[in-house]
Structures are given as structure tokens and as C-alpha cells.
Length: 463
Image (cartoon, rainbow, N blue to C red; front, top):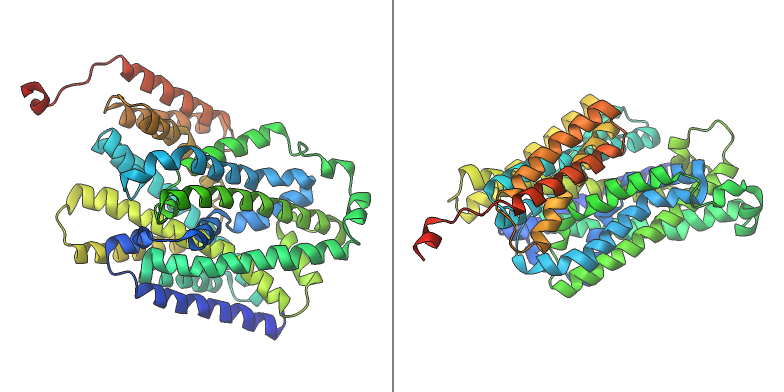
């Protein structure tokens, strides 16, 4: 990288820090810290939601899939987009009027406090793991491009994200996400995509030179497509980092329409990143590591200055997801565990301070895990499997089943979690079928509890 590109990236980090300080001036209450005061308009909501959806895996991973499988590489992020569209069209109307802070809080209202606690633990572990993968990704990119050590790169990238997240919570995350959304959009759609296509001689040459299989939407395999559906389409519906952004919308209409637009934006992003990977198949020599095709291609085809902007866009994707999942994990711990179980009567000021301290602890833990493990992709798949297999059915039932048994949720989550983990242990950590076992066991438990009469409370018995 040239000195200009390095300057662009460092300046970008500086802008994020300043944005975090600006956001901290608005976060004066716990609701403003966790949900930006539930006051975001359409553009801010769309940018905020899109930024957290499209992480580093969405950019680098989809380019890799496009390189290896052609246009069928779109399915990974397309399934994420479909999940967000489904969230906007099916679930938001049911949940927006409840004024909850977390999905676990919703489950607690519809079932009982035990369901809130166990779902919060599962979701907090999942969001922490996502944060760890993003810190690893940030460190890897900084190490490769700036030549710093991997440890120093992870520390710098991780603490930049942690700094602005602690300061202003969701307000800081929102301000930085708008910047990141714009940088991501410009970098991918206006620079990387058109220049990549131009370098191969245009779409006509791309079509002529690539193998026919690269234009087959099913070449990645139906089993892989179905796995993406189970992990990401269903996972998006119960992911706290996604719902926490949904709760920031000023109105139900903004939440619904913005989610649908973000879903379609994700699909367009998937197509763009896949085509970039297909261009890399022609432009990079055989034997090039498919994991590095995006960064390698960017270094090869982009002039100084533009390279810095594009790579800042990749860092943007990683940082926006990292900040969102850090805040989601800390919100679950503070709202559904600490406040629910131990410090029920704390003042608003102490609760805000508690949120910041928990965010600090979760962030430091994520950075430590990233430095220690440095590869948690399998663990992330396990977390997604538990999230989809154990929480999706109780969540849907909570919204659409009016007279549900209050104990059904906690037993469904607990039993299906054991089933998913057991299935993964027997069939392998990359197997899809344990998710289906978990969903089936959840449905069986929910139906079983439908035949058990509810126990009336003392007040109900008196009436």
C-alpha cells in the first residue's frame, strides 16, 4: 500500500473515534444508550441495519465464493437478505408495539422469567462469538495491509470499535454505521465492481471466458443453499444484534420498510461481491488463495487513494458488525441477566453506568478470545445452529400462539439446545441436520405443552 492509502485508512479510524465522541453526547439514558432513544428516521435506520447485516464475511467471504463457485456464491448473503425481508414483512408488526429491549425480554413476557434467562445466555454467547470473528477479521486486514503484527492489528482495530461503542452505545454505533454504510456502498458499487469488470474487458468478456458452471445458480449445491437458509434466514429472525437495530426505528412503518429495503440491498451486495470474485478468477493467477482474492485483487487493480477507500470499506463492514454484536451481547447481559436477577432496583444513572461497564468487559473478552483463538468459524457455526435450532420455534410461537403454556418456551429452548449440541457432536460440527432435529424437538415440546393445563395463579383462583 502507498503512503496515501495508509493515510486514508488511519484518517478513517480517526473519523470513527470522533463520531463515537459525538454519539456519547446524546446517550444520556439507558434507552438512548441501548436503542438510540427509539428515534431513527428511514435513512439512518436503513444504514444502521444494513451495516450490521453485512460484515466482513459478507464481503470477503462472498468474493471467495464467487471465485470458487461463480454466481451461486450469492446464496450466503442472499439468505441473510431474505431473512431480513421476512423479518420486515412477518414479524415486525407483531413485536413493535411491545416496547421490549431484547428478544429474550419478549420471550420472558410470553413465557416466564426462566425462558428470558436461558435465551439471553444463548444469544449473548452467539453475539460474543460474532464479535470475536470480526476482531480477527479486522486484525487480519490491518496486518496484511499495514504490515503490523497480528496482535497489534487486533488490539488497534478491536479497541477502536470498543472505544466508540462504550462512549455512546447505540448512538455512537448509529453515527459510525452511517459513515460505514456510505463507505461500503461507494467502495463496492462505485469502485471495486466497475473497475473489476473493466479489467476483464467488460461483462461480455467475463461471460465468454468463465466456465459455464460459474453462471449456474445451483453450482454451490442444494445442500449448501439449504444450510445457509437454516443458519442465516432463520437466524436473522432471532438475532439480538438485528432486533436491537429494529427497535431503534421511530415508527413501525420505518422499521418495516427499512428492513425490506435492507434485505434487497443485501441481495444486491451479494451479487456485486460474487461478480468481483468471478473477475478475480480471471485476473489472478492459478494457485492464488481464494480466501484473499478480494484484498489481492484490490491491491492489483486499484490506484493509490482508491485502494485506501475500498479497504476502509472492508474494515467498515467488519467494524459495524463488531460494534453491533458487542452492544447486543452487553445489552442481553445487563438487561436480561444482571437487572433481571440481581440489581432489579438500580437507578437510571447506575443502569447506564452498568451498561458501559458490561460493554467494556464484553469487548475486552472478545479481543482476548480473538488473540487467543484466532479462528472461531466453526464455533460461530455452532452458535448459529443453536440460535436457529433452539430459539426460532419458541420465538415464532410467542408471536402467533395466543394461549401458549408459560413453561413451553424454557423447556423447548433447553431441550432443543441439548438436541442440537448432541447432534453436532455425533454428526460433526458442520452438519445441517442437528438444526432440523432442534427445530423438530422444539415443535414437539410446544405441542406437548398444549395438552397440559395451565396452573392458575392465586389471583386468578380468587376471581
